[in-house]
Image (cartoon, one colour):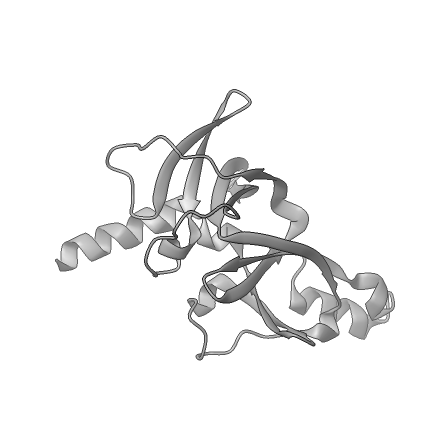
Length: 177
């Protein structure tokens, strides 16, 4: 994944103009926030369909869908980010992403409230994530994009969808209760 730090380092090294190093991000809404993620892992966007529930799965995992013969887990991104579950509307979508887990790629679905656009951002348009002030865990954020209409929080889907870390966090919470 192309990160702010690597783009800035390449620009400082003079290897290419900043404009040539722009990265593309898919933007979407969750509640009232506009978020984005690198399009490098995005495979497709599909209309929302109700996932089949799977017993004993972590909170936030809505279930699984059949995508052309493949079983694909669907995550409610709002729940994964520590908020109440998303309400399904006519604009709800499932973004199909490929995330790396070690040497394997896992295909997963991410439920979002609405998909907006693919935007191109240069390194100069992306700031480091703030240590506070957002409603998203800072380790899930790769940067904040400055746009004329406001800010877009850029998410690290690999970190958010790391099921092993997710399972460990759920186990720790269970021990506390």
